[in-house]
Amino acid sequence: MEEQIMEVKIRQSGVKDLPGVGAATAEKLESAGYRDLMAVAVATIGELVETTGVSDAVARKMINAARESMKMGFETGTDVLKKRELVCKISTGSDAFNLMMGGGFETSAITECFGEFGSGKTQVGHILCVNLLSTDPDAVAVYLDTENTFRPERIKQLAEGVGICPEDALNRIMVARAFNSDHQMLLAEKVESLISEGKKVKLLVVDSLTSHFRAEYIGRGTLAERQQKLNRHMHTLAKVACTHNICVYVTNQVQADPAQFFGDPTKSVGGHIVAHASTFRIYLRKGKKGSRVAKLIDAPNLADGEVCFHVEETGLKDVN
Ligand code: GTP
Ligand code: MG
Image (cartoon, rainbow, N blue to C red; front, side, top):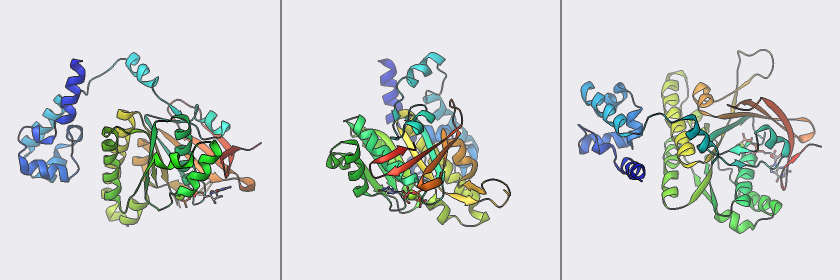
């Protein structure tokens, strides 16, 4: 009980409660994206000095106070196991794909699918929405659409395929179109407000994670800034996934890697920042006879593997 009260207090207290932070500094912090104590607790002194203009000593005090007020302590392996028991798996519709993923796409984790155009990344996003809604009558899916590829018609078709009411399915998917990377980052932060409104969000699709970042930051000189912003975005997504037990599914493009002479000369956008922040990473590509191949290349507790399936009207189907 006491713990709960403490947690509520932490959640309600914002950056303006930190020592040395007046109204003006609070505003600067908030507009630079440091909206809660966690963001300040994990910031560096240099970052805070740069964004707010306070002295090193004040920045250090702010960070220390933020750290002290957070429960950044340790928990036992048993506690972690208890939390793991709450993890749900969202079916892909393909038995082979589910098996490779240990049952389906996990909540409390970020799963990234990267691959070339038409490899099926967006289809997987639509299918996960419908499969979640068909197994949990109260669940809600959130779809952050950056490329204008969300198709309600496709949702209706897939809903009919799994035998749920198409209108009900559409009513339980909250779609937001992101027009640039800042907008995308803001929308990801707003998912928490949907949850506090009482919506049982279990899936967050970000399709695509990197297209705006890639289009807005061109050339070597802007790379550091792009990666810093992507890092903050991934941090928001990871926090949403873990604090609310949500499955975060992100799609990513590939770019030619001229350094690779043998094998598949493609690599995903976003580099190590995206790769390390994703819990599961899947490489999607086109296979033989119109099939699609999904290769699991990174997972904390699953063996690497490769499966083949078809994208069909009613959803994903195994290759016989
Ligand atoms: P980009 O966003 O362009 O990078 O591609 P993507 O990886 O998101 O590809 P997407 O998920 O849009 O896959 C498109 C492919 O899915 C099409 O080329 C079709 O082969 C297949 N597809 C999409 N809709 C249907 C459908 O209703 N029925 C069938 N059978 N296949 C479909
Ligand atoms: Mg797509």
